[in-house]
Image (cartoon, one colour):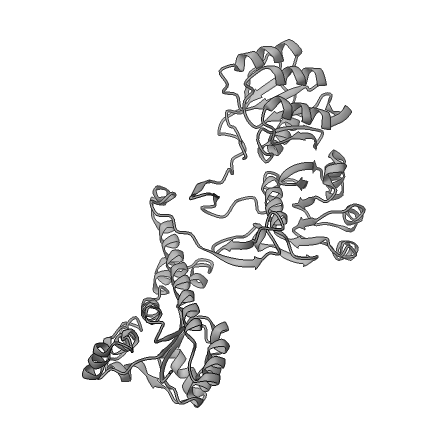
Amino acid sequence: MIKRAILSVSDKTGIVDLARRLSAKGVTLLSTGGTMKAIAQAGIPVTGVSDVTGFPECLDGRVKTLHPMIHAGLLAVRGNEEHMAQLAELGVEPIDMVVINLYPFRQTIEKPGVTFEDAIENIDIGGPTMLRAAAKNAQDVVVVIDPADYALVMDEFEATGDVSLKTKRYLQYKVFEHTAQYDCMIQQYLRGQLEDSERFEFPQNLTVTFEKVQEMRYGENPHQKAAFYRDLGDIAGTLPAAKQLHGKELSYNNINDTNGALELLREFDTTAVVAVKHGNPCGVGVADEVSEAWRLAYEADPVSVFGGIVVTNTAIDAATAEQMSKIFLEIIVAPRFTDEALAILTKKKNLRLLELDTTIRAYPKNERVMRKVAGGLLVQEIDDKLLPDGELKVVTQKAPTEAQMKDLLLAWKIVKHAKSNGIAIAKDNQSLGIGPGQVNRIWSTQMAIERSGEKVRGAALASDAFFPFDDCVKACAEAGISCIIQPGGSVRDQDSIDACNKYGIAMVFTGMRHFKH
């Protein structure tokens, strides 16, 4: 039975209506600060917490509810005769309901230019303490943190005169979920403010928090349940920040594949179009105009791009939209779609159109790659480097021409984002064959060469890791590849160098590999 309730919220959504319904049921309301003012202005009887504690709010409001007259009333187990006798002896009345949401710490730290002092001042102390006390005693105390739950609680209370234990347990869980996330945001923020924060990039105890964006129809396969979560910090330029303009909701595989496409797109500071299928690039085009970049990307592999995902860092215009609309695509992502382009593309009912600032090339600060394994979690830095500091090393007698070097760098960007073992071939601002995810490098090379067709002659080839044997060089020579870029580092590097010299192929070592598993 709810006889006394304390209401103290930062988010005042629905609080006056809740107070009115509680008061109508004869519940005595206690409150503080702005919440008490809002309730009183609505003409609803309310008592200040200071009147209960006999102690005024102090220290700029830092101390309001931290008092035995409040916490004894929350923590006393009603079925414990000794507890109730002590309350009577101390003159403490039980508190049966707590409605609290916390200082807006997250909203504060997300403000541009927020000061450290302002962030610290928005760490709630009394609120979490009351929430945890009430939730610990949930069999006797109704504790509500989410305005979305006001109706659930009041409908039960008004219908039965009480709130069911099932609902109380649900609300108890929500409190500890919420306070855990709140504390996690604080520790993540504080870690980022340390002068030597890089010492704590991989803390001894890793606590992370995300919020749910959507539940999905299914996961990677129809028999798997799934949901999509987003970071709570800066997400500019990332997929969770995209605005969906058209089409059905994204699936698990859509999100995973689109993220891979966006990672490759970050490599380009000029107009580019990237097409991806099943997490691997299948077409890349670079040009002054987006329509030409699309043509190059599409013609690179028109078979694989069918049903694929396309991303670009330039606005989609009518000419490009007209060409894209001629085939089946799952998703198109761009920083903007012209009105004419939208009119063309929205005729395709199931095509997802996402607006996202894809011109942002930097990853959010402290971005990490996390991969769950059974019983554990792998965490690493994001692979945000294309090449190491310093110059590339030409290791063959023949050096690549300026045009060949341009092709090599394009192929290198692409192979970085192909699953290992990865091989990518490029020429004249266009990807050709891409051989991803094979269990040996020669198979990946043969696949990429085959997919390149007649254009392979004179093209550049990139390998995400070193050549352990000279078989890949021999395959390149037979196909007419003119130049190769690879990390180097094999104990048999000289075999590949000798083979390149024999066949007149230029080869460059980067000194950096890009495995992607």
